[in-house]
Image (cartoon, rainbow, N blue to C red; front, side, top):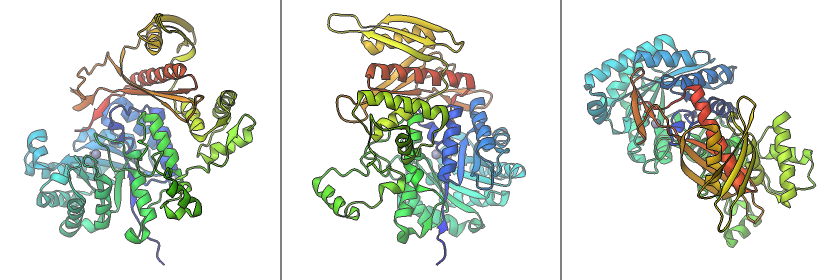
Length: 541
Ligand code: KIV
Ligand code: ZN
């Protein structure tokens, strides 16, 4: 029997995904995610929007240099609006990759042409022809996207796409930018393109859906059934507003229902759970418990009747085996007497490949935890790994924190930190509560003005000795781009709308006050790294 045809996975976690509010990633985090996307087996990594800021450019370039090499390396794409400055910048960033791609876009819906771009349909057609040809003169692999394609007049869209093909586009990506279409409509649009656009059969048709109506996965699957052979997705479905189509939902649908689709991806499904946790830890965006495929409850069976059935035969209630997405076998329970070898085996089963100093640090934390907790469960280990490994560069390091509070007392905190110059500094402050007191004391030392916009705390396992995980977000209050209503001023040089960034931080500890202090340090370090890298939040349109 013939191998099923391939649907290419174009991952845009680092570009559209990073546009999620608060998902700011620094260069090292982007590189780590890109390396793991390559390991997952995606075909294309959209590494960023190079013109947006020097930090965005550098991240794309380093991904091209460090992840885009070798026969099996993924294609590295950079986004560009349909103008020469953007295209040049994207090309400079992706060109070191073995297989670079420029992804250029221009809106085609009347509403965008009239109100946003203020150009006629004729001008749009001319610009697409000129800019796709220009991009093609630089790079052999060109993707063109008609932004807001889902709300564009299909007849005009066909004309635009024909121009793009003639100018040299090799992939045509159809975005449902505002998540407005339904599966019937979106599948119909893709079928219409394949039928009516001359040359469409000779290029790859791609689908890019947003989840505003909760239809992104359904629309993408409809596009696949209509002939799309590339899909644009993000890990955990993160992205602008309600997010993008989630990678894991598409991959696992094609994997689980071969008789319906008869298509495959090149993704190694056993990497899915791990990359989901990695992206969640770095972006500070938690995965909702009931999220399909990767939510904590997705493979849990609470109801007695279900548990009974699953014990008799997993097929009664499970359509996917947890191991297929890389969820570890929970039978290996660790505790006080577990040695380094058993611990390392557990890490491998959880999908972590740690060695050297990273492994030593995590093992030390595990041993510490064993003194406080009888049984160390998988979520405890994941929390330790997140806390030790998925952290930004430590400009400032928390050395000690001490709090006194209680009834009739004013909460007071003393902290000591080591600064970027290696010098230890101490300070103390009084607050409205213990966490407020700690944060005020830290602020007195670090002097990085910010506003705390979110604070959440959760126990990673049950019981009084559970590890507490704190996730927070801070917003710099001395931002050069001052509006705080989501979008900020237009950068006059690049004409990119900048967005005020928020920075997430996470910390884990059996003492929740210490976890809160660690989370704050992690967010501040991230904010300081971003300032150093010159990254500004950006929105490409
Ligand atoms: O949603 C969208 O239209 C996009 C394009 C830039 C492809 O993200
Ligand atoms: Zn998008």
